[in-house]
Length: 397
Image 1 (cartoon, rainbow, N blue to C red):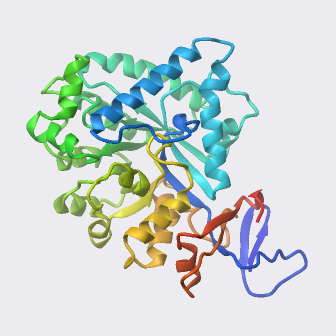
Image 2 (image 1 turned 180 degrees about the horizontal axis):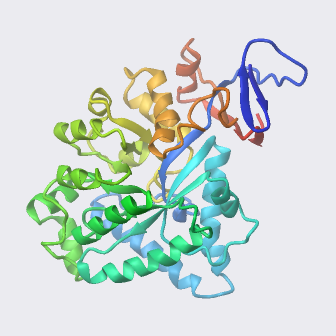
Image 3 (image 1 turned 90 degrees about the vertical axis):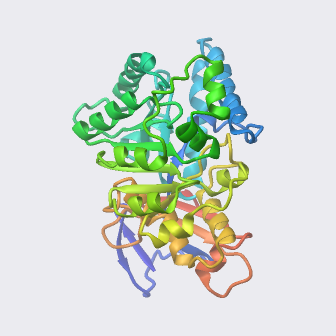
């Protein structure tokens, strides 16, 4: 029994009382934590292609952003086209069991309805925004910060409450100078930092050899500067990032043992694994087991609908259970809940079902094939049937 009052869990016991709701054959887990997504693509019906080569997929992402931006210039359609994807994505995340969502922000909130789910989620700190920073060469840094200042002002109407993080995008889109500035600012203002790192082999080629498809892409658009990258391998960048107050390393698909060991020794740094996006791109097996063995705090993210069919975080947990069947079910659950809360600095309120914590619950109808309820909840046929935020059903089971 989970006893709830005033939006919080007040007790756990086995004594039914008046008003007790019997959920039948359901597994109740803490509200899920989606530690990485790009909600701007939430109106896509299917992932963008092709998934390989990666540089071509990046081109598809850029084209989609440009298409949307061109149409947003029409004031009659701007609110619908610019903001609906974010609202749709938030609703999808919340109704599939997530209670916290970390989003990479690129656009404006200028047209947001003050009653929208976006405003509510920001005010209740269920939407944790990270302002994206992109400038492959020093020449673009000033404009990048100018846009970021406008975005941060929108995200933080109360200057005393800094709730947005910074997201220097990736080693191939962020000059070393911009990275250092972002890390320094994060330190001054106590902001978390999220960065895509060791995502593809092409990225490693760019860092180590200054060659490969990503370099060719940057050359084509006139922004390749061999002196701009912040290191020759991911470890160099991890060491720079470690100065920030809290760090989310996104993907880490190609991190090596010494890099994972470094991460494991940094309690304020977390690795965010996006299992179905990883599978979409056909990467080699993720170094998840090594990361866990080396003490890395590994959380889960859905990434976006540009590389994923939906934003259901429990489907990511099921993917982990399928790909790593020897991993204990309790560890997979932690990755989807407590580890994500820790990564986002919300362990005091989220990630576990315990007295004094927010009454955020996810109810799962278990699948077949296991007598262990948690393992059954991770079975391929298991589905999320209920979602609660602070004692209120968003999706009633």
